[in-house]
Length: 293
Ligand SMILES: [Zn+2]
Ligand SMILES: [Zn+2]
Image 1: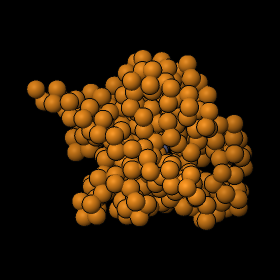
Image 2 (image 1 turned 45 degrees about the vertical axis):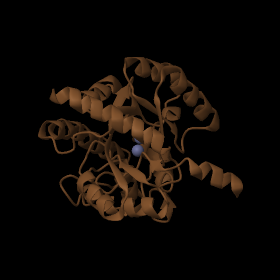
Image 3 (image 1 turned 90 degrees about the vertical axis):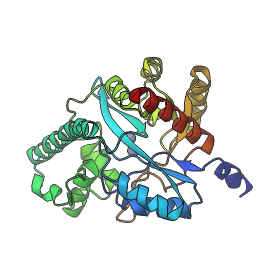
Image 4 (image 1 turned 90 degrees about the horizontal axis):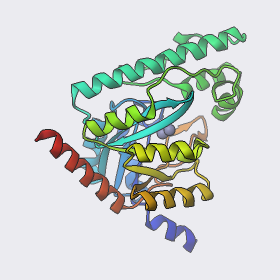
């Protein structure tokens, strides 16, 4: 038990959480409440290609005394494989930034349609309308977990993980990839808009050569602590962070609960210290200052 206490001490901020604005199941304010319950001082809202959840979370944070970091997780691809880039202190109320995100979301929609078409081709009775019933607001982002829900509902999968393994994940029967921006473009987009760019879950890519290339290209930080990074990964990325002077972050990748299954990890179970947050905040301030002058 003492061991858990020691680990917990360094988690003051969960830098990676999703809400109903993309494929999470909780509202932005619920994420802030969960952060408070978990004893955190700060939480980032990092929905896929949308900042639609940020304002609600900021208001909740103000009320509950939790520091909310406006963030995003941008989907990119390298050689057909998904690479996710996290952005912190992005200009969530800037129309030009929002317009760029709309373009990225259109790509996500295209992928959903392709996936559903592929599922139909292999004989599964599912329609775009079935899945998009879940789009309850214009900013809400529909993705693979919503398709998985529909597959469970129709009896084609037992759980979200099962749906990903059988159909939706890499190697699944209906897996498709679509043209996405390169990770370098996402890094540039985030930094040019005054934000701080961090590589999400590097352990998932099994491509440390690319990780290092992106660091050299201009990443500000790396997500060392994430449920999908092995202990070995963590040690390796911590070392890379030290070598290149990168900010170390961590996050649960909280997506809420679907059925009775926790998709990814509980909010606050992964994170990093307030020192990391201070470094990010300072860097964003400097960058915004340079933009304005
Ligand atoms: Zn991700
Ligand atoms: Zn995520």
